[in-house]
Length: 404
Image 1 (cartoon, rainbow, N blue to C red):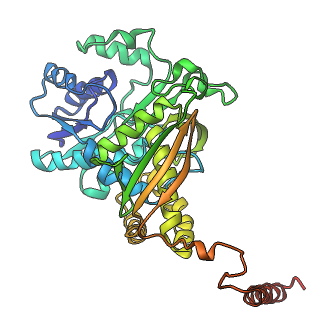
Image 2 (cartoon, one colour; image 1 turned 90 degrees about the horizontal axis):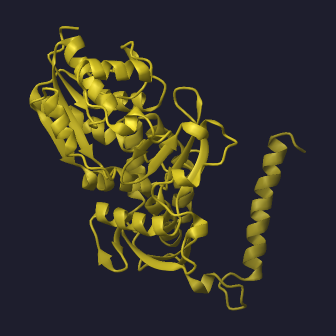
Image 3 (cartoon, helix red, strand yellow; image 1 turned 90 degrees about the vertical axis):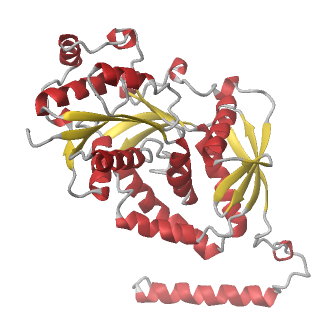
């Protein structure tokens, strides 16, 4: 263990990562550099500096990564209309590769020979962090305390904190949230507590962001989202930076009860997990982007994207953001987005985001071809020939397959 001289720790400033910080110093006898990332979690990150200083850290990095998160991670993911297992918009999954990237950057800048994270040995995040590290630096040393130490219970953690003078906030001593939560600019997630029973309905008091659909306003809210090259670029005619636009969509979604999802998902590590998510802005954005594509994408390109999406979603969920196969798929997806430009109008109302209009100078929609009036360019003979040709293909397929 003495061969580790300096380690970059993903540090939130909370109890667990503060214990990890001290444990790294004591166990490895190494210098610890902290990396605290603001990715829009809605909590003040600056107090992490004081806690790190109290624990003897001299190199402290606190970075505002909200714009990079939205621009380089969330928006590329939404170009693919990415949904995991039909429901999950991957809010936690897409944040981990950015934090891993920043840790590797800091390791290179400070001459650190190792990185560390606070993910437990039972979840997906340990895989996401570590595949991110190795994808960016195959030779980096990775330390995963939860897989190494013997502090396997809350009681042992609290005793370790007390013995080493690590401050414990009151909410961690008792009376705090019974849920394990993760938040960023895209979503907030909830696990544990009553949610361990998949039959139990989530308590309304659990939700920290959105009003319930029942309590949302009785009048709908209409918004226009402008797209350029597959990405949202404006809201109600106002050009906005990516993180600003996503933040405003979040506020609109929260106010209208949009984006709540309750799912049982298949984790990469081989277990099922029940999670509840609030993804207000992302839910609106997904509906808008699909509507924009419906107007501007060629049929075969659109269908191929839909075929590729589950594989793309699985790669992100499992931690393969930096893998060559994800980059291959991203290149194909991005190549389809050049003409995905225009404006989508949505109606936000009591938990729903409904597309009510779309327009684009790149539109492939021709109203003259969308009618069954007599003047249509496709006459009855054309239609009959088309049907016969495809019927012949179906019959030949059945014969070859032995169905006839």
